[in-house]
Amino acid sequence: MSAIVECVPNFSEGRNRNIIEKILAPFSATAAVKLLNHSSDPDHNRTVVTAMGEPARVKQAVLEAAAVAVQDIDLRTHKGAHPRMGAIDVVPFIPLQGYSIAEAVDLARDTARDMARQLDLPVYLYEKAATAPERENLANIRKGEFEGLAGKMTEPRWKPDFGPDRPHPSAGATAVGARMPLVAFNINLNSNDLKIADQIARCIRHISGGLRYCKAMGVELKSQDMVQVSINMTDYTRTSLYRVFEMVKFEAQRYGVQIVSSEIIGLTPMEALIDAAAYYLRLKDFSLNQVIEKRMLE
Amino acid sequence: MSAIVECVPNFSEGRNRNIIEKILAPFSATAAVKLLNHSSDPDHNRTVVTAMGEPARVKQAVLEAAAVAVQDIDLRTHKGAHPRMGAIDVVPFIPLQGYSIAEAVDLARDTARDMARQLDLPVYLYEKAATAPERENLANIRKGEFEGLAGKMTEPRWKPDFGPDRPHPSAGATAVGARMPLVAFNINLNSNDLKIADQIARCIRHISGGLRYCKAMGVELKSQDMVQVSINMTDYTRTSLYRVFEMVKFEAQRYGVQIVSSEIIGLTPMEALIDAAAYYLRLKDFSLNQVIEKRMLE
Image (cartoon, rainbow over all chains, first blue to last red; front, side, top):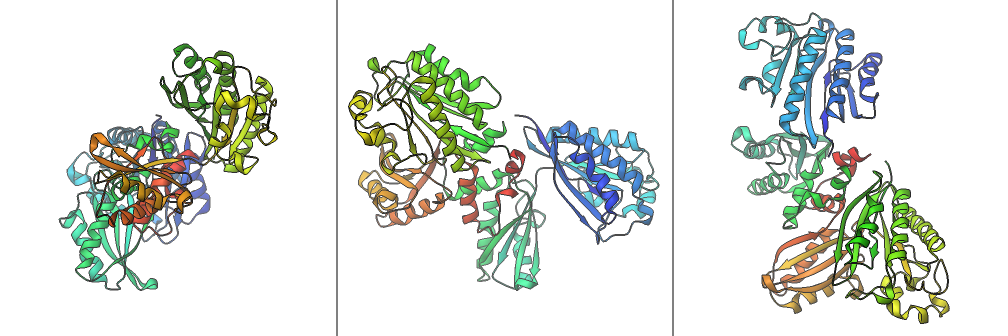
């Protein structure tokens, strides 16, 4: 099976169509890379690209887009609602097929090294590629943002993994990492009491004592007079969607509240859903190799 | 999205390794066709090939394998447990991706016409490709088998769709058709009473008043001291797996019997299972385009 990796680089430009087009171009330049999605938000002043393809070619496209970003984006004059520290702000690699998380970590490291060298840019490794526990969480690395970088980088513990020990004057610094595919899974409740959604989120999420690969918070859906448990499944192969669904169901019961519906936002690997089907249908001895689409991808 | 079709031709030879290898060869001769599976049963004296790929190339492989079968298999001396009427007994085409059932019917018709012309072989169209209602069911066409063909073909209503109005002396006749992907879905009960499994099968299957695209029968699993409702889902896009599962569950309740487990035998399209996940997780507004593997296949 040929290896396929996904990459979701974030660039600090969400308004200038010319620059955005130049950033997107390398992701459409070859059949070995597919531009799956891109969204530019003027308020955030940020463009998020979703691409996938052969690992070496995806890396190449990222490096080309990064060169555009360093040349055309100036963080000294950049304003936007989203926190950011660099022109290429963050570059996560996600293994999709025929590729392990360890290989994605290697790819992140190679990309970070080449990016630092080619663009004279400080680069941090994060998440599964992190070289220290406090660098796993992107928020720690980005804390202080572009404006705080020069000061932060004088501290030995914030020495970048690659590149110079000071920010790039206009392009700041970049974080490159590897992570499992993330599934954005929201569960809607027949209640408009945000406290209930918050309380349930607290029960299921890892940080408050819940499931290992689950992040969650309560959200108010005012237009629908409803609250939602908004969930990020950070490794659906270890923490199953159905398990979260059933937990939300039984936690909601104590408030006399029911699940109305759920939603998956954006993309999901088929395995995350087939795993739920296998649980509810009590499937025995089922293998993903029985799925025609899996065989077709081989 | 490139069109992909599956084909499951059945050949009346399950013992002679030389002939079997020659029949399989065309399905491995090009990267545009993938030999997914083949099984040869000496008792049935029959080889079932599962291949998929570009429609025109799959057709070509079938025609080449058919030429081998006509040359090397002689039905006049063929013995086996499985009913058969031809050296190439039956050739179903199944649309998998980027291909409609109507296109699969056209492909079946083209293949049948070319096969009849190239091999001087009578060919019947069946299932969705059938030219008369009584030809939809393969069992009707094959009734009487090879030995009865000469007599049957004198009747005007059994005139073949292509080729001569008499059997091929050694290779008989062939049925070529198109159908939706079939999912073999078995549900195991905590009972050893075959009557209960039979009774439930009768409630859910189309022929006895049940669901439109469901065939079912009760089966005894002696080694496991258990009975099973053995189900063929003939169009999972219209009759969902979860609906059959929930029906078996509530029909079993009247006997105080529960579902122990279920099984999918062989291959299934991912949609058949994702549809079940969407039901049980109450997924709202979910589209198959959100599945990464679907996007990767585009």
